[in-house]
Image (cartoon, rainbow, N blue to C red; front, side):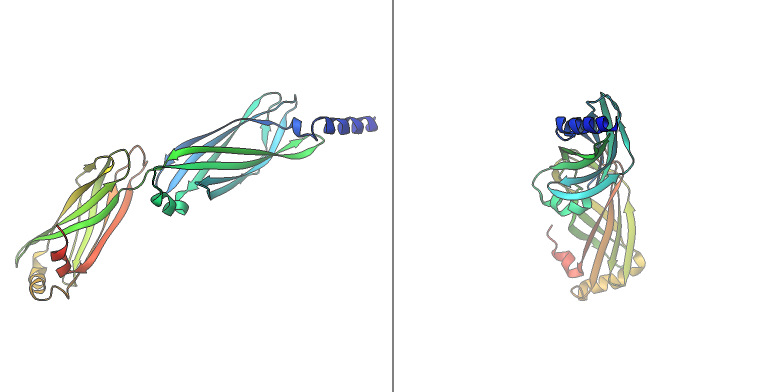
Amino acid sequence: MLLLLVAAGVIGYFATNRGKDLLPTLENVSMSTGNITPDSLKAQIRVQLRNHVPLTMTVDSFRYVTYIDGTAISRGAKDRPTTVESSGVSTLSIPVNMDLSKVAHKIKTIQRDCVDVAITMDAYAHLPLLGTERIPIRASKRIYVPKLPHFEIADIDVTHLGLKNGSATITIKVTNYNPFPFTVKNVAYDFRISDDMQVKGMETKDVSFRKRGTQLMPIHVKFEPKALPKVAFKTLFKAKKTPYTLTGTITVAAGKQNPKDSKVKFQSSGSIQDLKNIPK
């Protein structure tokens, strides 16, 4: 009896292409993307396997690698067994988190808004009498990756500077690369002139920007009266030797493509003389 079972196993092994014809076959692979930001991408890979034999099989484990435009950015594995039902189709769901910061430079420099996301996966199924066999799986999808708007200081105009009051207008050049508008919720700034004056503030008025274009956004700064005499003196007589620094953070409101608020920093530095020479 034992010899008959062994003989049947050997015959079955060679009759089924060394057992490979008994393996579950790939019915369909789909990739659905969830939250996409300039820094991360969440996706769900759904793999449908068809079992051709009237026996329940087990996918022991699988390993996967995800790529963006040919660059590997994440790897993962699942070691818990997954059951493939007999004579039917079973679906494996695989959550994938991709860290786009690893390819941030590539995404910024490519001359398009879409990237190719691919996944290669090897699943290992256990066959009765034949042991473990590998099932290769491949899938790819072209997705849109939003880019954060670009902010730069276009002008710092000291509109008034006297002994009792003073003000400046900071003009920020805003470039939107995306095919949808966005809104700036607030702008926080820290403006310093030498060690004589520091002005911190925040503008909280929502400002909307149209899709794909460049616009200017003015920020109004009020100087502290007690520091104005020293600043006015240095502006007149020591402009080249008196430094200024401007730092800040712009909050971009959450929207359809960015599930949460994003913060973008900006900065500028130089001398008071430079402020007079910034192109208007």
